[in-house]
Picture 1 (cartoon, rainbow, N blue to C red):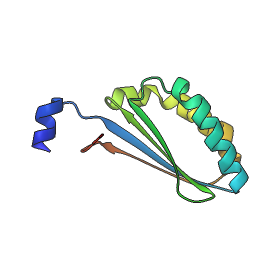
Picture 2: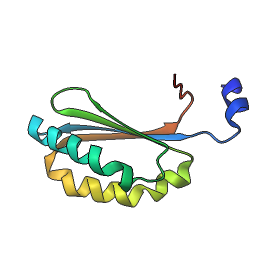
Picture 3: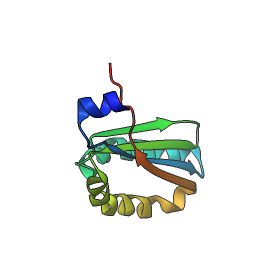
Picture 4: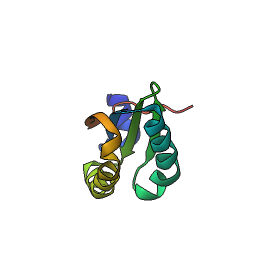
Length: 105
């Protein structure tokens, strides 16, 4: 990690990882399509947005932000998106943390 801090500086990106188990495959399909189209404009401060389909009904969304303040500024848009779709969710699990490696080829 010391090498990474020397390259990037003292500020580390932060991540929000949200795993959603949907009630149906169709709900997951609709959410994937909607998020893919709208998330880049809904979360303009995100350094990176990833969406992973883990199963027919499980989707993970990973958002990277420059710092906690930028992630917090995205909270209102996230709350609106989650509220609009909550009837399609079976289980939601969210974690946040410091990015310790972000390797890109």
